[in-house]
Amino acid sequence: MTTNPAEFSAFVETVNEDEQLFALQNENGDWVVCDSVEFENSDVMPVWASAADAQLFCIDEWQSYSVASINLEQFLEEWIGDLNEDGVLIGVNWQMDSEGKELDAIEFAKLLVKAF
Image (cartoon, rainbow, N blue to C red; front, side, top):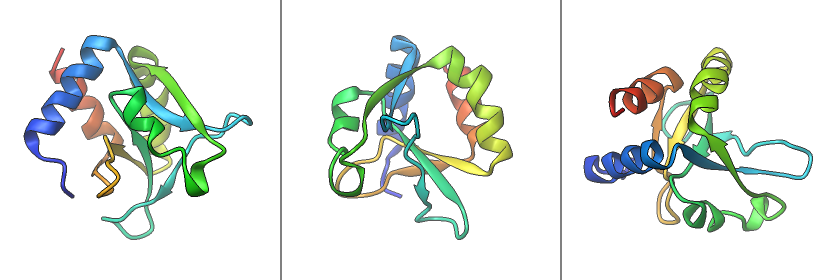
């Protein structure tokens, strides 16, 4: 994927500083999860460090979704285990010209915690 180390570091720094990250959610409370580009038979939950970046994806098949913030502590404590158990990867800071970096939920959590 095209997320370079500097972009990923900036993502981690922003998420830790703001203590939140962003994803897309519809009015029924469902979150965007899509097929992995990197790994066969895997799903990915895209997340962003900024609401503005996430908003760019509220188009086409995701036009009925809106940007929702997720508290970082809650994400680490309540979401990571479930995402890992379900085999859902984390799509980091996707951009319109590429899908973004896809990480195992536990590895993603370790990188965020290590940055504290």
